Length: 579
Image 1 (cartoon, helix red, strand yellow):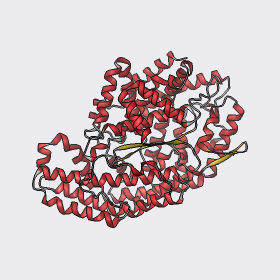
Image 2: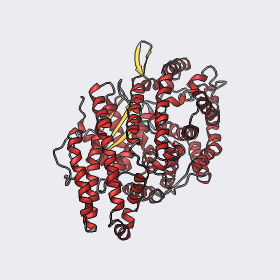
Image 3: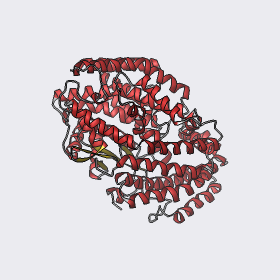
Image 4: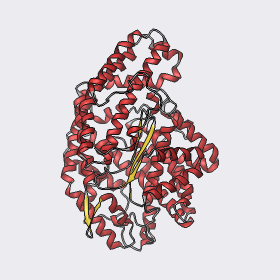
């Protein structure tokens, strides 16, 4: 199996409970540790002993989490490596199903422990979030769902494998679909259309497989929800994702706020684009090109150039953040270049025991690669901000706030894009980014609303699902003309991996984007304080409820129309200042 540099990283702190030498891919070596924890719980006679028991359980969880992450990272970096695939699937099939009932038992032991009331009475602020989340874990756990969740993970991996394998032959060269993205920014409209149609056709060739994979995943999820006593997977997912602070109805109101406050701005941008391109109608291949027909921005040629220039951005933004990015470079915690056989997309994965972040992406030399680099680095800084938190459960924050960390870093880092460009091109990149924010809100609304529809309509047909997506494209798709390419539009959702492998994880991006825009607005008033607030919020990890995390970072937790409206005005005003 291909080895990655993190394989030799030491634990951040010496292990106290888990043996230094252990194969965490061998269940027979893991189970005695879980039995020790089960046996030790009733023997905890003091609060100190009880807290140490929680730390010991967290140490084991972190070690297992890191083992899982290493295998996942290796698999996504090398989807064409059978050994990497086997290693990942071995953990999914042989460790996780055995582990879940044992973790459920430990959660029960915590909730039933006679010292729990005293712990909460004496240290409520420290343990209330953990206690709430543990209660949720026990409430939702069903042993009959363990094999279903294993099948879900395996089917998700097959979707990733298929999506990562897709290539086209473009003018005599094999290209991944990610690599084809650069041609959508070419000034030659005929070339853009040729490239776009080739990619669209390739995706459509796999439409049946994508639908089959999704239907398999959807059926598994509906069974999981039913087993847990929920009417449908929508209700289950909101509970399972720990959405204590907002409801499905709040999300529907957010979709409406986007429709009312963001869609007019999107249509303005599209009208401006159509006019600048001097075309009668915008076509799908006209949506990424520079509207003045300038050549695509080229922030770098080699990935190492991107890394060097990103280092310059962080050095200028904040010395501490610059040092943290250098640490990641020194430890080779980056796999950034696109290549055949690599899973699509980008992510940051925390190695929970080393307490270090790993960044994965598919850079091909586009401005969006710079955005992705800043975005994933924001997640990495979040992981590093919690390195001194010994309570494993609190080294992870709710996704809604994790994405504030990443999206705010895009906006804060964009101030220093001259590391990549001339001043003129830096302003052009800033415009592209702000226009991208306007463009992404409707897509977020469409993806989230689509999942609301899917999982609140069990038993729907494929034709009904397609019709629901088309209706959402009519609502949130803007004014591009898709005539002649209706099938591609009807299947656009196949490219959104979250719908397949992270159900309902997408509205978080919209909620967080509002938080990030508020951090950015604060920075315009007081850069030093805004960055200090941002870092203070990150350092809390998951130790406080979501509204408190937002408040610590200087951005109220709210995604109503009242919040959306002034932030859209800010973006529009900033765009008006840019050429």
